[in-house]
Amino acid sequence: MEMNIALLPGDGIGPEVINQAVKVVNAIGKKFGHQISFKEALVGAAAIDATGDPYPDATHEVAANSDAILFGAIGDPKYDNDPKAKVRPEEGLLRMRKKLGLFANVRPTFTFPSLIHKSPLKLERVEGVDFVFFRELTGGVYFGEPRGRNEQGTKAFDTNVYSKEEITRLSRMGFEAAQKRRKLLTCVDKANVLATSRLWRETVQELAPEYPDVKVEYEFVDAVAMRLIQWPKAYDVLITENLFGDILTDEASVISGSMGLMPSASLGSAVKLFEPIHGSYPQAGGKDIANPLATVLSAAMMFDYAFDLKAEAELISKVVNESLAEGIVTEDIADGGKAYKTSEVGDWLAERILS
Image (tube, rainbow, N blue to C red; front, side, top):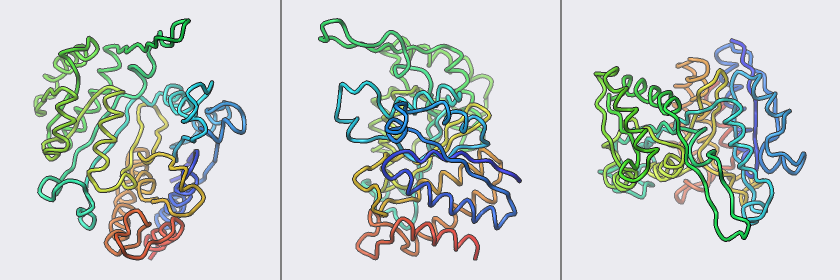
């Protein structure tokens, strides 16, 4: 198979972890006989520094004309720490999602047997955890209008807007995923307070009869925030709006023991984007110490979701688990043992694939 993959490394550790994913993808291509080409483009703070725009037209052209996108991370302290900055790296990510039609973020949470002791939760709460969030990406308070401040600068306002169509297309993805898993869907909202949440709940209730094999539960977002810690094994597929999903998926990410281990996918259009859920970690940029495994596992999701190549995806997941079991890991999860460099982990994974 021929694959044209856009590389958007971004900021901080983004370029380093993307480089390791490229090593792994090339190894998979060699082992399975795929022809893989890459095209790199700027995004985030790197793009602002070079062009003044966090998502330049040239980057959009590269992304839109690819078969899939591997994305690193965005963010830089010089923008994060300036509340009056006129342009921010994160604007590039939001605009990219909107322009590419990436309306569904898929974030799995699972544990690794060799690292289960790293979880902040007790063993009996964590062992066997396996759930996935479907977060709506292009609506809600991040995109609603009007937004801004009054003339005096003493009040600020954001508008939370959702249409039935936006809720329906995301919910259907969740229902279909639940049918392939444990047939349990949880709609996460704040329907006791918010009109948009009442529309979410109403829409899901209308769709539910079309999926009679799926059990549907409805929970308020604050209750889910507690239960994710108290009993994460209670969940299978969760669907929710943009803001709630942004917060809850970061909470869920630490259950595995490290944010550096969790991949994600953004779906909805012909082109699909795959990225680790961690940030740009600028303090580690250029030091060759960042954990690349979440990005490598995002590449595994790419083979699965973008190309329907299950064997390739499973092989990547297998060698990642082997690297964890054999202690071929970076300093964040070395646990007192030898800490390998980012590049060394990437080299080991690629070599193991080809062995």
